[in-house]
Image: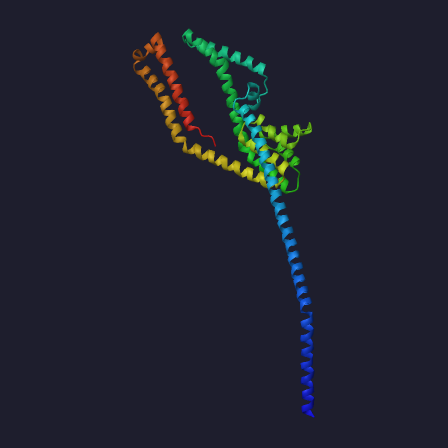
Length: 337
C-alpha cells in the first residue's frame, strides 16, 4: 500500500513537470517577446533619460558660454570707453586738470593768477640782478611753468590721499552689502562719513543718482575727477555686476584686496628704489655744490661764467644737459604699478 502511494506521488510530480515543460514550450516565445519588449522599453527610458541629461548639460554649457560672451562684450565695451577716458586722463585739458586737483577756480581766473605769478617772478629775478636776457625766460616760467606745476602737484597729492582711504571705503561698502543694506546706502554712508577726497567723489555719485544717472554710469564717471586706475577698476566692477550679476560683496572685497596689494607693491618698489634716488640726488646736486664751493674759495676763477657772454652760453648748455640727465634718471627710477 505504501509502495502504491509513493508510485502515485512520483507519477503526479512527473505529470506536473511534464505539463509545466509543455506549457513553457508553448509560452516560451511569448515570454521571450515580453522580455525583449521590457528590455527595449528600459533602453528607451534610459536613452530618454540620457538625452535629458545631455540636453541639460548642453543648456548649462550654452548658458555659461552666453554669460561668458556677455561678460567679454561688456569688458570690451568698457575697455574702449576706458581707453578713451585714459587719453583724457593722461593729457587732459586745463579745465579738467583744475577739477581733478580739487581747485575751485575757473580757467579764466587761473589765467589771471598765472599772469600775476609771471610778473612777480620776473620782478624778483630782475631785482636779484639777473641779466635782461633771462627776464623773458623768467616770465615764461612764472606764467606757464610754475602755475601748471602747482596744479599737477595738487592733482598728484589728491590722488595719493584718495588711494590711502579708498580700500577702507570699499570695505565699508562690502560690510554694508553683507549686512543686507542696498548699494545706495553704502555709497551714501561713504559720502557722509569718509574723509576727503573720497567723500567728495562718492558725494558726486549720490548727486548723479539724484539727477537720474544710474550707479554703474556714475561709478564709471569717477575717473573724470579722480585720474587713477583704481577708480576705473571700481567703475568696471560695478558695471559688470549690474549687467552680468554675481556676488557684489565678493567682487568689491576682491577689489579692495587687489588695491591693498598694489599699495604694498608700490611701497616695496619705492623702498627698493631709494638707493637709486639718493644716488641721483647726489649726482644732480654735485655740479651746483661744486660751483658754490669754488665761488667761495676762488671767486675770480668762476666769475667769468656769470659776467661774460661765453660764460652765459656755457651755463645755458650745461643747464640743458643737466635737465636732460635729471629727467632721464627720474624716468628710470619711477615705476608704474
